[in-house]
Length: 237
Image (cartoon, rainbow, N blue to C red; front, side, top):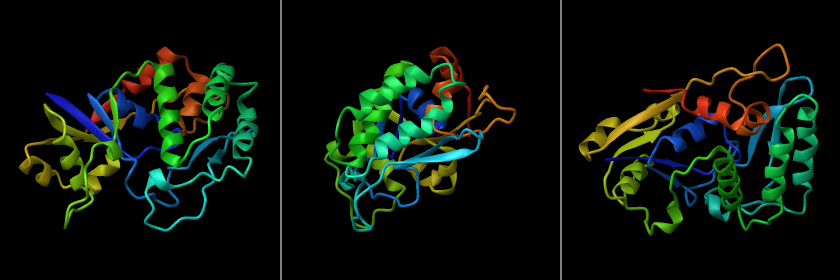
């Protein structure tokens, strides 16, 4: 039997996102769901020179509140790519894998993307390529699924799981425990799990460890093998 995860495409999300992606059989990007303002779809956190969390952001054009992620246009008239490079300079002298991560960003920023979902999915693909994550991925927008009448937000996991033969388990992040109705999933013949990455501390070139930053921070300070050990370090709740 198979396990499936369904997540919105985030901008270089934290390690827990990739931990889930690595340990399921199918991952679906929920690219056609509504964009959430003030979330992590177009921003994330890295470290400043003072070892404090610092936000990197992809600016977006104005859009209606109910706009889907794959309809959110990137404001390319702003120099946001260079802003991200500038903020990452804080890693140059202390992070052993700085050049490798910059090469990955160069490849990402070499393209122009029609919308935020395209950018985020491509960024995640590049991370997976570097880390050797080979989980098959799909996009919700390509599955031909329409929202049904009286459909609740947590129904999407059930609907998507039923599109793939052999899927009997749905896996999500820990915060999903407050969102998903586990009894509803069991009534539809599905197990539901929540994977909690242990956020293992690693050397960040400073005295105090700052957890749950962007995967960019993790990859700056750790080899591919070390990152994969962290991805494998999780509990099912």
